[in-house]
Amino acid sequence: MTARAVALRAGSGTEPEPEQLLARAALGDEQAFAALYDRLAGPIFGTALQVLRSRAHAEEVTQEVLLEIWRKAATFDAARGRVQTWALTIAHRRAIDRVRSEQAAVDREDRAERLDLRRPYDDVTEATLDHFDRVQVRAALGVLTELQRESILLAYFQGYTCREVSEELGVAIGTVKTRMRDGLVRLRDALGVHR
Image (cartoon, rainbow, N blue to C red; front, side, top):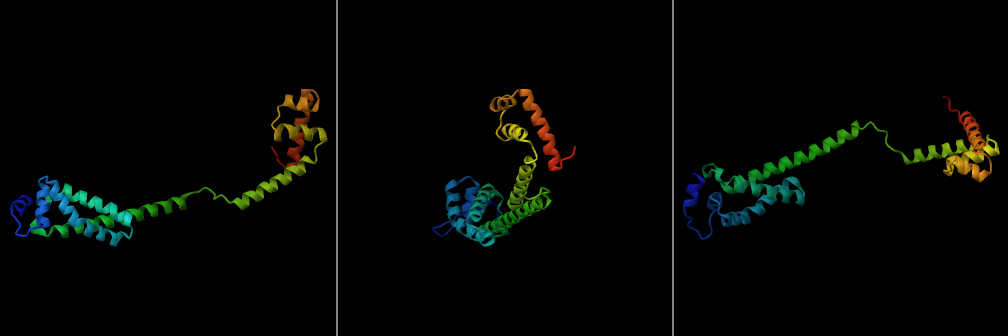
């Protein structure tokens, strides 16, 4: 029996059967669909919740299923079964699809994490290495003359320009550049950095 034929057949009870409501909804009757919605929303939600175990996901699936029922109302064949059975089958399939989709997303994230070749950042290791580097630099600064050390500290650790270092120390800019170059060579050797 087609949806049109069911719509034309009048029900004997005061409340129309879901099949009649769906047939009228297939013809564009929004009030019939609203009544069908009220009848089916609870069972559809229950089916989705049973599969998904998440109210939020079950609510989304319920809305998707009811929208699909509205869109496909004209394709329903009453000879193949009842409207509620049809609706709950759609709900169950949609819920299963959602579970598979969520699991696929988790699996993709897991694969991406395993394929991530970057070394994980370790705060303790980094702090230890930073401390070790500071100790080495302080020890290396100890091999410099006082004039070399002052020039390098002002330029590299306090951000002075060569001209500002020259003014701060009261020496010619050429002297500052020479002190810094000689000091950096000695630092390189003290730190064991080879070219």
